[in-house]
Length: 125
Image 1 (tube, one colour):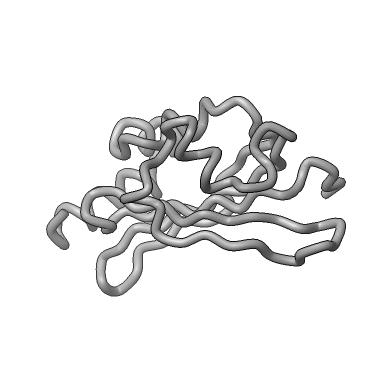
Image 2 (cartoon, rainbow, N blue to C red; image 1 turned 30 degrees about the horizontal axis):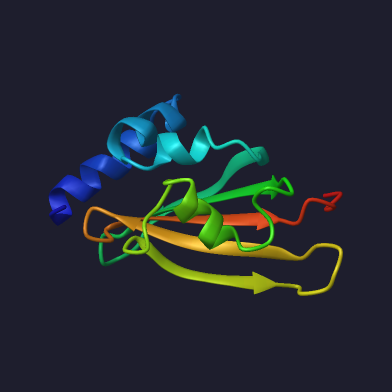
């Protein structure tokens, strides 16, 4: 997306009461992500537009046993993402009760990026 289109996209997302509806309409993989079985308490925690016109949306959820561990591989198997748009993944707080895995996904030439942080199935939040 060019900078002007990205700014318009960000305004639509950030200033609409149906934020998830706009995301689903504008970003091809969001509907697959939000309808994925195995994510409990999925929510958007942050949205921003960087100076270089990259739109970021951060999601968090608690995983079921079917998605955790190996979240990135499970998302690819479920066709939520491809290896091409899985930009980065990792594990945090390894071995702790609040252990999580995260995946950053990119669309539209990576000008739209979605970060998904998924806590282990035993997480009590």
